[in-house]
Length: 129
Image (tube, rainbow, N blue to C red; front, side, top):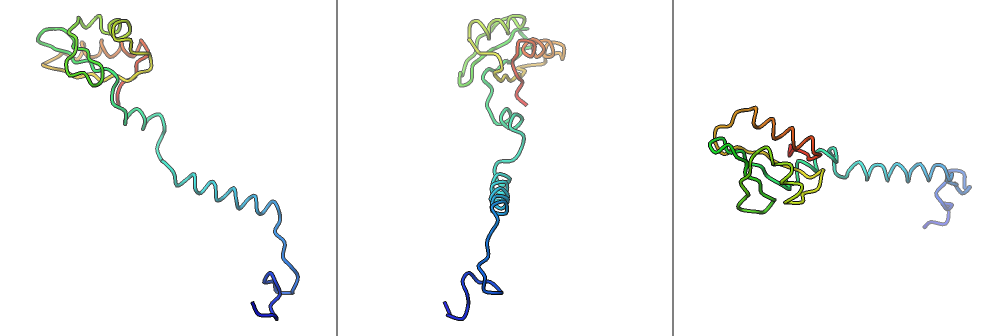
């Protein structure tokens, strides 16, 4: 460093001081910038959309039954659709708040799908969006 330039580089030769508040504000701004660069989207919406369902209910319009399976099971249990919630809770032991998915195997009237969906929602299960 040249001898004629005072340290730290100031115009009048006096040392510059940084205020504590200015340093804290700069640090806070840097942290907020880093946080803003992180993951985006709503945590609850994106989490449920990204997750696989914990239980799948397939409504079979031909047999007028429901096929219920846990995630990862290749074959489900055939039960009356009116018993879906009790079967999921008591037999499969799927906790409330878990995610479900509904599919249809053959032609199913909308009332049947709505009834099963309403029963699962009423029991505290969440639909896969």
